[in-house]
Amino acid sequence: MDKLRIEGGNRLNGEIRISGAKNSALPILSATLLADGVMRVGNLPHLHDITTMLELLGCMGVEVAIDEDMSVETDCANIKSCVAPYDLVRTMRASILVLGPLLARYGEAEVSLPGGCAIGSRPVDLHIRGMEALGAEVDVEDGYIKARVPGGRLTGANIFFDTVTVTGTENVMMAAALAKGTTTIENAAREPEVVDLANCLNAMGAKISGAGSDTMVIEGVEKLYGCSFDVLPDRIETGTYLVAAAVTGGRVKTKDTDPVIMEAVLHKLEEAGADITIGDNWIELDMHGKRPKAVNVKTAPHPAFPTDMQAQFMVLNALAEGTGTVIETVFENRFMHAQELVRMGADIAVEGNTAIVTGKEKLQAAPVMATDLRASASLVIAALMAEGATDVNRIYHIDRGYECIEEKFQQLGANIRRISG
Ligand code: EPZ
Image (cartoon, rainbow, N blue to C red):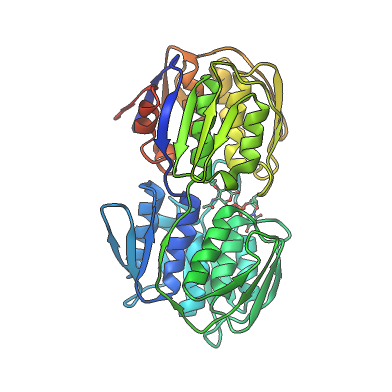
């Protein structure tokens, strides 16, 4: 297995381009199953998860053409299967996102249960209840969700999510778009990626209003058509590089990104002492060589502080002046990086869903292991400020969500290289 070797001590300086958002690309690629006609999706990040989603669509019989600029054209005219098999779903839980489109367009779906992952049990009960509310009959057997639509067409319903779920909201949006009648989603997820999906579905002919608020109204239509759509920039990739700049006291400009969708993160970085300047599609962070100050973060659904930035800010606090608390309220087991950071000399005390972090000027290099996508990126950031060479193992987690991570960090002056194992 590949690993990343990082020699600490270099201050980051320079500018990089931000890729398209993985968590917008995955639901939008699933939504192409709804289109009668050719869909073009652009600004796709070159990531393993995107390849897996394209492989999943392909195994159903969707024609997929990939351009050299990583935009994709799909055509579902000759779809032959409504099954999302275990061997693909187990590598990418977001495969659950094909459930809604398959039921809406083809009246049937057989999707392997994604199973848990490192950060939590990750149930899909809210997805299933959403489909049943829209009139689907769902059985869960042999590790698969087996669903069908009596009468062939879903019917609009009023749906209330008692827990805010991003992909649960997205699945219901896609299913309701072709249902007969109107669907209301209350306590909907408000993430920018949910808004991006709504914009794409509306460009295909859907009638969705209220995206970005906690109440969405979807008027079902008879048919959705192909369109051309570019996914929005990745706010978590942006935040990850800005935190890396902050911990090294450096100055980094992220281009082709969107400052409007990352207010909570930018406010926290300013609280940590960073100088932030923004333009329409760029964000620059300058620490003027200073060490960051510790901050308190508490994760919650958008527009609050994102759980996908929690690990990165734990590293910031581990290297900051003072003590900061990190409270994780979205997932039940998203502190695995804490123990790896402690092995690098960090001072972190975990009590339940709260981590109390007292900063140090430097960490110590150590072989560490990536566990989930964002935890892996935080270990790379920690290694940038560790004395000696740190090996981050199991970086397949990173390759799922960060395009060309070593090239982008090298571009900023980091001493980092991939060692094939
Ligand atoms: C999405 O996951 C993202 N993934 C995650 O990003 C992100 O961390 C998460 O939203 C929260 O923002 C994609 O968009 C592909 P949820 P999702 O459903 O939709 C519980 C990354 O690093 N829940 O919003 O799976 C669940 O257990 C990934 O890019 C149920 O109980 O998350 C959790 O506690 C990691 N039943 C809470 O809701 C359900 O049916 C929020 O989960 C569904 C969810």
